[in-house]
Length: 309
Figure (cartoon, one colour):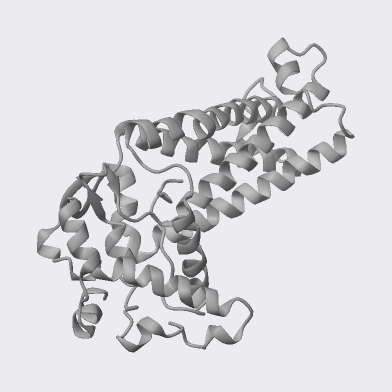
């Protein structure tokens, strides 16, 4: 589930070929005048602010691209092990739900017990990776941003509205996401959907973990002390209600993963998707002086359109 974004890398359907003309930089920036709607003036102001911040990155020369290290081996391995454990947890959970265990009926082992053991093991590993291991490598080792900033919240508003066609995508933001600032030791742009994805994942994986241990504690005849500790929610409500909460959290995680995967496999993001496999991304390396020059740059309309395609 890479960042990847962070998506790991994400984008929207409006991520290509969206460059504003000079007039559109002070306009609503969409196929309709969003200023007619409640809050539309604020949305327009946010887009103008972000356009002024990122449009200079449209002028970056593709010949200046070089392979940049985006992910370390720790992030890559923990990401893909998370994917594997999530698949196992979902498959075994569906087996419980449907009562069909198929290949999990192995020899002398009952399919239910095999599914139960795999479900518990994958759930525990998933929780540790999602809540501890991946955030550590993501932030401490690889130096990516972990918390959503106010600027990212603004970007999130525009990107979400661009996704449904109400405004145009932020010009230059696609290039900024592939630009590394050596003085600040950070990537210039992060797709905010990627960061928000991790907030959703953390919350609902935690909900899955706590409700899961509560269900396990309710079923166990002689639970280990750590199952009792982590299953402290057992008895807060009925077993059936706890099971519904566990399923609800599962559906939210699946929905978040589906959105994350959709953005990751969008054609404009294939390079970012490959980076969570090989660790490197072709992009631009800049310093503070170059960044200041870029942010002061006012590329002409023809250059905008050519470089944003």
